[in-house]
Picture 1 (tube, helix red, strand yellow):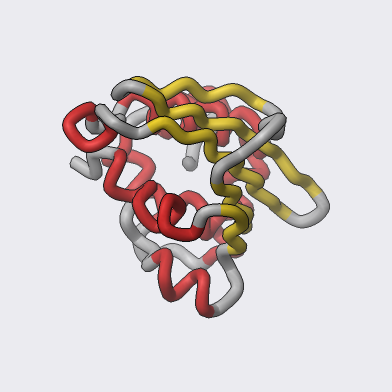
Picture 2 (tube, rainbow, N blue to C red):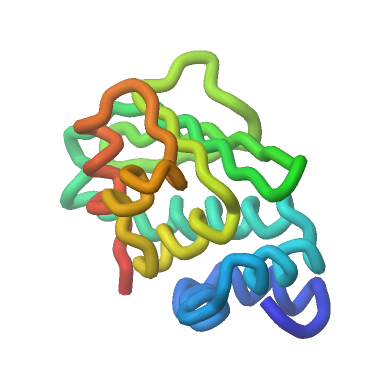
Length: 147
């Protein structure tokens, strides 16, 4: 997430680049990098990448709507992720109805989706807020390829 804004946004599609951009970094440094590009453009790219990494072998029987809210300072962006029949659709905006909701700061979100943040630890430390179906929420990480 360094370099030009366009370069930063394009790099985020690639999980390895995103992982390298957040691994070992302090949250304030990650937030500063996100601020350079903008919260929404960064999240748009990350959610697009997540949809492309859905594990159809794990989600073939999943029918769920997950609402994500990612914050940075006073900014907040919401996304609706619908996983159904081994397919994932993501749209910007909060869901009409969600089976589970997750809310967390952007640096923790980026660490979470790259495998650099333990979701249970984040939940216990109240960095990750979960609503709705907690069992479903606990399974979300297994829906996506981390390679």
